[in-house]
Image 1: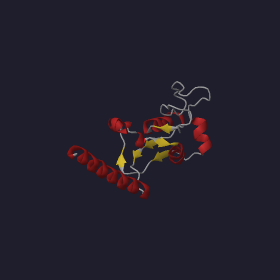
Image 2: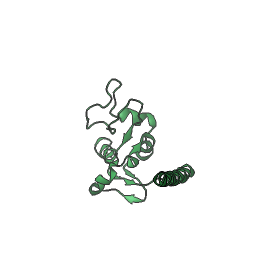
Image 3: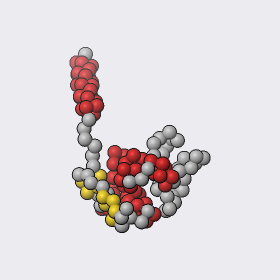
Image 4: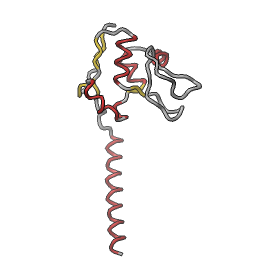
Length: 132
């Protein structure tokens, strides 16, 4: 495999790395597996993890996940790290990562509607408190 291209909506460049600090733009193991065209087991073998250490030191020869707060937290990877690993360790020539927002699901739409309803209830209760 000579190249990887991540086809999504908005192009990712080094200048936009600050915009990727949002956790929603991090890549899951499944995303990395799909983009590197490797098995799930391979991604876990590449990952810089240790059973006894929650967040091991950075290793340039490994795929370094984002810092976790608990052992049960799933591994998440920054797109820059995945691109670096593909280029430097796997030797892939062209690495282009583009970040895409997930499409809105029915669950997401329902949660937004519930939130709007709760906000309306809160405003109503606050107006009742200020009147009484």
